[in-house]
Image 1 (cartoon, rainbow, N blue to C red):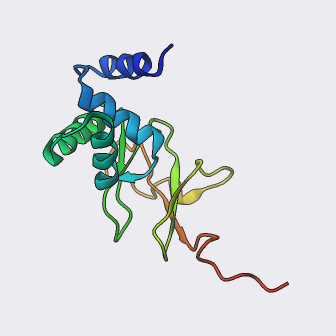
Image 2 (cartoon, rainbow, N blue to C red; image 1 turned 90 degrees about the vertical axis):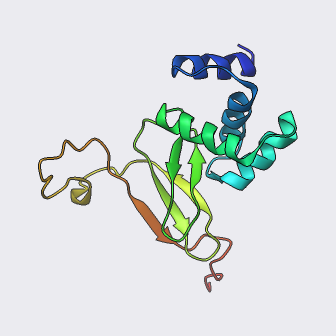
Length: 143
């Protein structure tokens, strides 16, 4: 299947009308995981030309609400978007440069992922952010 046809199919399946800005936003986020709005806007403008900031915000909101995108916002960071959805994965964030990477769900005994009290909520997701320093920002370890 042609990449644009696959994107169109995903947008339609999510109950959204297929438009050039929606296809461009979805493509931009798929190619740039954890992209902020400014990065998505620049990629969309490079692909389809002039598009307003508000139009990109609206598309990001609609696609997030439809489940096509996931919005994350680590403490102290701008909102970021990713196309990896529905698998309850987590993230690791560099305290120095802000780099973000995916971390698959915890394996083995993970008591912090089960709420000690759900206060009557039906819990369907646990959001975990691991904080540290990425390999680029970490000082070299002495041998």
